Image (cartoon, rainbow, N blue to C red; front, side, top):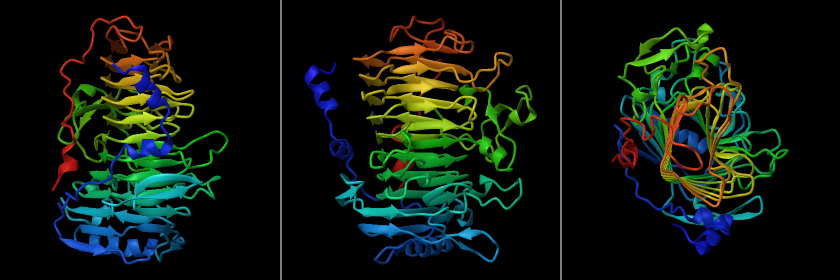
Length: 477
């Protein structure tokens, strides 16, 4: 139990001291590339210099790109290629489908060195390889602006070209500071890292502060984000709206991009506590049919990549630290959330986006800040357990979000959600909207905590075993 002095100390943490909680020093362990190609980007570092090095390592079948310490401006002008595809566009572009199976592309900064720099007039402590993005539209993900764009496949107008082309092809970004342009935030929605249709990524020991987009935006991919500082603290808010920390979108994006049929996984029991969903006979519904009665099964990588694991990270002043939509699925564990300005620290969208599919949220610490909620799912299901909420009010809130009372399988419903063994200090604890679709003992199951009456059945979720921690992908070497 934390005492009053400890709570007071936590409440008075400055931005810099929160950031300093995360040491960026680590060793480069991920050498799992078929090729041993190693290229150091020459200084002064430019977007084109990084791009040339990335292209060379990809052509060599994998390896490592080192970006030296320094404060570098990323400002590459968009250029149309002979095929009409926009190249450059301010983004460092990586197409993993050219790698051999089991290969890695590592993009590594000088993260054994930590520096202090300024962003928006504030001092921040961060890895010494700093990339300041003054990017224009990247031309690969429509409407997105970002520093890194990583794809498992460029869709070539064929519904069969999705991230099946990136099966078992991997990328690591490590020891980088990625800062969006604070002078031209208005209307930019500048992301730090965008990932689409990738079968395995690792982002570790990075500091990312972008804009009112997302620090890290993920579409239809699986991977791990580990030991990062995710912030929106150093930007001027646009109309009171702050950017997301990590946004996880699922395979429904296939449908919107014309790549195939979206898969709504019916039975979460098959996938909770897992990382690689390939080879699992997943029963699903087909929302493209207009109903949720067309069930079948699939093990196809093009539909069922897996979850995004987010672990050991620090979040500061994000609109939502973590959120999901379009059937996205994430695992948030051993993370710290501090100073959320006006929304919930951990969120899951409901019907209007459309809904997140699932989430596993455990062993996290969520610290109070004015107006902040803790975990507030609006759809999907999963587990929420062993978290500590300090002054967060309400700590867990289950929210109604456009439920269709005529369709019991509407994916906006919160269903198959289990909540247990959370600690609530100095704030309102558990609340749930009383609308149809959020019924205790039917849609969610909780122990006797936070003012809630225990349901029958009561948690823990039967048969649930958390996936190995730390995630094995962080230990590849």
